Length: 142
Image 1 (cartoon, rainbow, N blue to C red):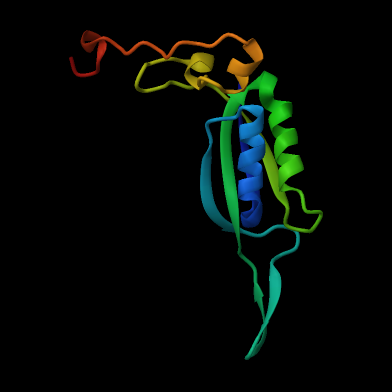
Image 2: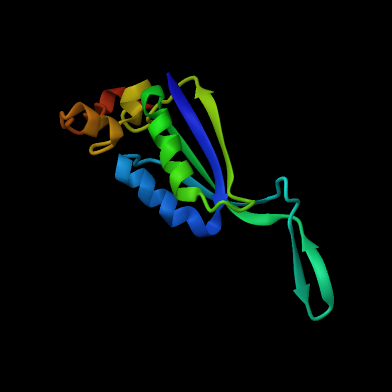
C-alpha cells in the first residue's frame, strides 16, 4: 500500500527537512510555498504606525508518496528536522494512495515509486537497472 505524506513546516526548516529526507533515501518530493494559520492564529508585529496582526503566515508544504514500510522512518525524519519547540512548527498529514503511474515508462504502484539509490533501493541492497523505455508501438497515439 502506498501513502502520501503532506507536511506543513516553517520556511526556515525546509533545508533541514530536505537534508534529513535525503539522508534516509527519500528522493522524490514536491515543495509548495503556501500561507496559513493554525492554533496561534498568526503573529503581532510592531511597526511605525502601531501593532498589527498578520494572520496568514508563510509556510512550506512538502508532499511525498512512498510505501507503507517507509512511512514511520520518513515521519521521524520530518519530526526531528522540522522541530523548534515553538508554536508554528507545523503538521503532518498521511493519506492512502490508490494508484501511481509513471507516465514515461507506464510503471505502476511500487515500481513507479522506486528511484536508483532511494530508501527502497538502499534497504534491498540490490541496485536496480533503469527501467526499459516503452517501445514506439506502445506509445500513445501510435
